[in-house]
Amino acid sequence: MKFYDGLGSFVSPPSHIMLPRRAMRKFPQLDEDVKYFQVFYEGQHNDARTATYIALTAAQEGATVANHVEMIGLLRGGSNDKKATGIRCRDNLSGQEFDVHAKEIVFAGGPFTDSLRALEDPNAKPAVAAAAGTHIVLPGYFCPGGIGMLDINTSDGRFLFFLPWQGSTLVGTTDRKGPPVSYHGPPEEEIQWLLREVKKYLSSDIQVRRSDVLSAWQGFRPLASDPHALPGAPTSRDHVISTNPDTGVTFVTGGKWTTYREMAKDVVDKLVKLHKDDWKAKNIGPCVTHNNPLRGGVGYSRNVPVKLVQKFGVSQDTATHLAHTYGMYAFEVCKMAEPTTKRWPRFGNLLVEGYPYLECEVAYACRNEMACTVKDMLTLRMRIAFLNKDAAISVAPRVADLMAKEMRWSKKERNRQLKEAQDLLETFGGPYPSEFSETVTDVRDLFEALDNDKSGYIDFTEFCDCVKSMGVPFKDDKEAMRAFSNIDTSRKGKITLDEFVTWWETDSDQKLKASLGEKFKFSAGKLGEGPESRGAAFG
Image (cartoon, rainbow, N blue to C red; front, side, top):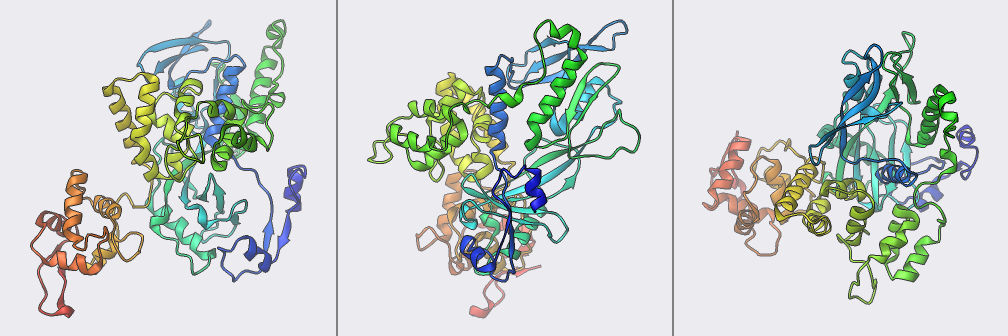
């Protein structure tokens, strides 16, 4: 680990050994059967916010940044009509197509770089071997603040991290080779694998349940190889920069977040070197990224959250969130915060309970961060979808209303935007599997399957979501509430096992029972008389 410290030029606190007694004080959720821990230090960031602020910083420095615009073709010219002179684009919001001409073209599509290169040359050799990784988000109480854990010896030899992130606990990741896709939802078997691995090193008196998964999603890592290199060159987590000698197009892929500035510098310096005679006269020199902080970084200090609380009367959690998300522009966000009508916090109406996001952030992102859709807001400007799928679904209508007001959408457009966002959110994993896979052999099994959080009762949310995952969703909330009320005879909002069995043996709600019976191939007939014979025949 000291060598690892050295790779970071010893700028972090030194790595060290932590013995069991101290480890249990720092991380009480851990299993007590441990020998020792190796402690080391890493950085952490909000990747979508970093990407957004890279683009906004470029725009601030004079770049033209086009959001929701896709390259659909390559423009060619020169003596042999092979030289790339620009690209054909499509605005995916309006459908308008247009051309952009340039002296140099760089493809920087991450794991999707090969799809861009296919537009340049349909027969191009692949440059990216994409690998998918699944992540799950658990409640924050599973992990103490400021410290996480890395398991370097999981059941299949992969690394697994268990970290505090954005007020929650982030667990990942798997490693699955395959072509990159924009679909967020991960395979259920990978969610289950992560949960099994987590249970191995947490205390036995802490349950880690499938229902504890607040959100689950997959991302793709670009493992790079240079198609213009000699045969047999290996793939790499380092970045690769290569220029097609026929078209003159350069691409960069591979690398990691920790090296994004180095990647930018290497690409820019390569292009400057190619045009040094022409560009020198225009005062175009080497890359200056190392001198340019990201937007909001100038003047920032660790005391910014304190200043926000004192000046604007927002809560401490919100102030910390705003400072980490917007840097010095957090002050501009707070200026837009409206009174709460409470004694404390006095300003800043929360968008959703349990999370520090403010309603005024929606308007700020529309005006200053190129947010164009409800999807943008819930996934990339705010991270609600990646932190809690159900919270994102519940707040989506309010976000649509706020954006409609800011963007002057018609009612039809507002509804279209909301439906588009809701469809996207359904692709994320959440507390309930997207497809029901448990084995049901009797009424008790069926009750336990519906009791997703294993609390001993079924609440209304569990009832609706589990029935949906079983493939027999309700038409609307009214139909769901009628069915729930038929079973919840005590009117406590909780269905017990006795209530469920009693309902099953009555003649009420035949439609739902018939649907469940068809799903699990069983009959609802009684097996006999007396308490020992209650239930249904399954087969």
